[in-house]
Structures are given as C-alpha cells and as structure tokens.
Length: 161
Image 1 (spheres, one colour):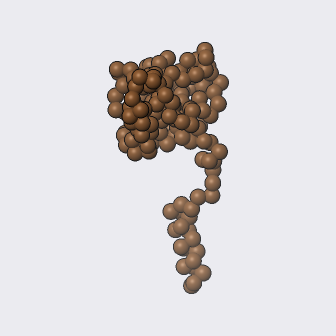
Image 2: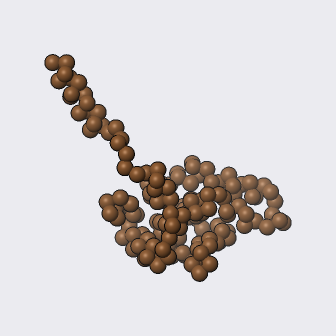
Image 3: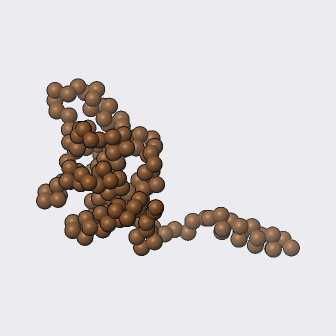
C-alpha cells in the first residue's frame, strides 16, 4: 500500500510514513537529512537499524554500515542512495583502510551507478527521496500532459472547421 503526505511525498507503508514523521519532527532536518531519513525508512531492515546509519547527537552518517553482515542486495542499494543524497558523494568507498586494495575501493565506487541502485522494487520511492533532496527542481511546472495534448488537438480540429 502506498501512502501520501500532503498529496505529494509517497511512502512505502504506514511504518515508513511514521518513521519519517517522527525523525523529521525530532531532528529538524534540511533537505539532505530529509532524503536520508526517507531513504533509510523505506525498508523495514534499514529502518530498524537507523542508529547504524546516522549519529543523531553528532549529526553525522556512519558509512561503515555498508560492511555490516545483515546487508542484502536491496539494503545495499538503499544505503548507497541514502548516503549519496546526504553527502553528494560515495562515502562508503572511504570506509576501506589503507591495507585494503584499491580494487575494492574502486568496486565500491562503481556500485553507485543508476542501474546498480535503481534496479529494485523500491525504485519509485528512490525517486521520492531525490525529490526531497532537490525540491527546487521538482516544483510544480506547466507540464505538457496527455490531457493537455488532447485538448489542444480538439481545439485545432475545431479551428479547422
């Protein structure tokens, strides 16, 4: 089931919505943190482990969460998107220390591509996280819709007659 807030932001479940509302109320977030909260809240596995993602006292992320054993293919995607929206970079790639090979670091960086992140059932919600992070680019616009096209077509046909 999909939930909406103010007719705009889409949520995966009532639990996702409640989590988001609770954290936003508590943390007074900017657009970066709203996107992080929203993205981490999408999935029950990540939502349950919020403390592993973000230090509320320090107001900082915990990139080392990417190496935790509970991570799955889908939660990796959520983690990478959430952190990329928060930092505008690839913060989980820097969790490797100097003894790790550069190949591992490069492999982690390469997993931030659109196809690596968006190819899962949460893709529609990932778009919502992006909208929260970049609200200035998703404001109402005069969009040419199918409905407007049909109206224009009818007008054109009436003008011809």
